[in-house]
Structure formats: structure tokens, C-alpha cells
Length: 254
Image 1 (cartoon, helix red, strand yellow):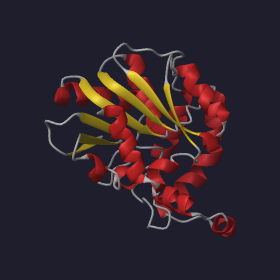
Image 2 (cartoon, rainbow, N blue to C red):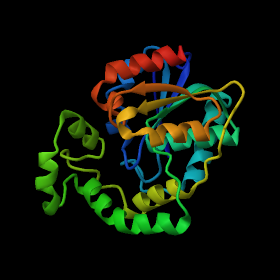
Image 3 (cartoon, rainbow, N blue to C red):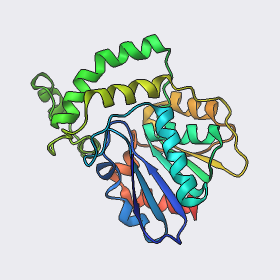
Image 4 (cartoon, rainbow, N blue to C red):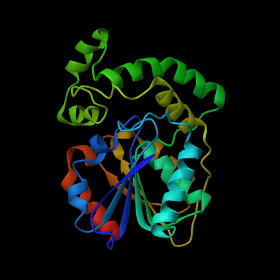
């Protein structure tokens, strides 16, 4: 795992955690310059998802331990905030419940927080990962899907899929094993209910167009989350309105 840092070391530390199968710069490259004036921005690049390493994503717990160790070593175990995009929100939840580091604000970006039994998670991954890996690694949809996806194109979908390299050459360095391990371990790594850590405020960016099921999950897993509701799709605020997203982060963390 690699950590990329931007902005003055004397500024409050903001940790950014990418989503499923995302390369860090494609995920956060448009917003890092908007934040680096007020924050010392640290962007995690998971094992198996950085083009400068020949690694494989192991599992959520192992990666969480690496994040904790980095925060302890570099920042004395305390940061101002962490923002988790989609799957990154699972890391935020794990960091909270383990209580090995401190963060003043824990922000989940319209995260799914899916949880499945092991058998069901493995079945899902066996079915989905071959197709998902092919799309991510090549940056193209299979021919059978191209017509359908072309009909569904919108500015939001184009921006969102670009995070996975779609239409931009793909992410050929990502191994199928990394996709499987990330997808599967996120589904089976337990997230506690009613997580409450004194001194940490949990914020959930709730994309209302995803449905109320996700709002119920936030209220289930966190004792008193601050819900920031947007009439948008999954992570649409981040991918389509970066300036508004950055302003919201400032309002929360400064």
C-alpha cells in the first residue's frame, strides 16, 4: 500500500479512501487540488490497485491494519478526518470500531455497507468478478453490453465509470485476484452495529436516489450519524460536482 500526500504538513490531516476497484488518482484527482489548500491530504492506494507496485489486495482487515499503522507512525495516531468513497466507507467503519486510531470526523460517501454470509459472498464473486475484472482491466465493455451501455450514457455515468478506467484505457495492472479479494472480503468482514466512538462524529453522505435501504444501514451501524442527504445517485456529488463536494468537506471538517 502506498500513501500519496499533498498540502502542508502543518494543516489538518484528511485521509481519502478510494472505492471498489478504483485507482486513487482517478477517484480523487479532481478534488485533491481543491482540498490541499486547507488540509494535508493523504490518499491511500490499496495493495493491488497501484500501478507502481506488483501486489495483490489481501483482505479488508489486513489493509485496515496498514492504514492504522501509517496514521500512528506519521500522525501520532490522530487525524482530523477520513472520507471513504463507496467501499472506502467500509474502511472508515472498520477504523472506527477497532479504536486503534482517532479521527475527529468519519465520513462515508454513499457507501453500500453490504454484508453477506460467506457462501453467498463467494457465489456473487464467482459470478461477477470475471466480468468486472475484464471491464476494469481493459477499460471497455464486452461487445454484448456495448449497445445497452451506450443507451444509458449520461454525464454522471461517464464520469463515474471513468474512475474504473472505462473509456480511458482501463487499469491493466489490476489482477483478477485483487478484484475478487476486495469484493469478497468487503462483503464478509463484519461491521458492528451502533458504533459509537467518543470524540468522533460520523457523517454519511446519503444519495437518496439509491433508496432508503442505505439510510437504514447507516442508522443501524452507527449510533448517531449525521446524515447529509442529497437527491443524487451513488457518489454523484463527488464525481459530477467536485467543487460542491469539496465545500461540504470543508464545512464538516474545519
